[in-house]
Length: 247
Image (cartoon, rainbow, N blue to C red; front, side):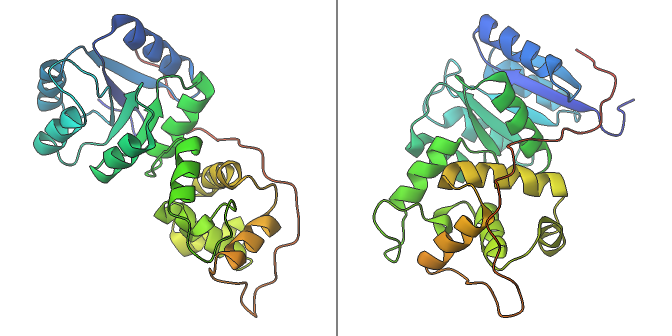
């Protein structure tokens, strides 16, 4: 019987070495998982059809018989509620944005380190979306609002959840208050903030306030203090409580 916090992940990739390496990375992390593997879309769809216990699919877009985003579209069409993240060597910002727009819960480049993969896994399993920081930065520059100075990162061009958080930070809200406002966990807020600090190239909440104000976003309200300069939080992710590991 599945335990309350047990996590089951299906890796879909046709390269045995990559499947095995990713499996080992997942099993060595602080989040115990049960890992299933498929070397084709047919095998993946068959396993998903037989089991209701797959918490997340890690899908390679280059799986044989598919090109572009067709593998993701096929999976989405047959299992629309199945959480799926892309694990791909294609790191083009346009591909990443298209995958997210097509319903992917995250996008992990294959060159990601074990630490980044664990970070992304924690974020996705918490119900949020993981996007590589460099892709976010590219997107932010491309979508920069006219009010933002050229070359200045625009916090209002971040994905929806991160944009909500930076605006609340700019209003002087603490992490605890942001949790209550957005109904998300403290760990999720910390994870988003770590990504936000890296994407915007800032080291303090005050710098976030200044960028939001410069981009024309919500300034600090009269009732909320302007955040004082402080060291940025370390990009640290607290993982879910450990359970018995199952391969």
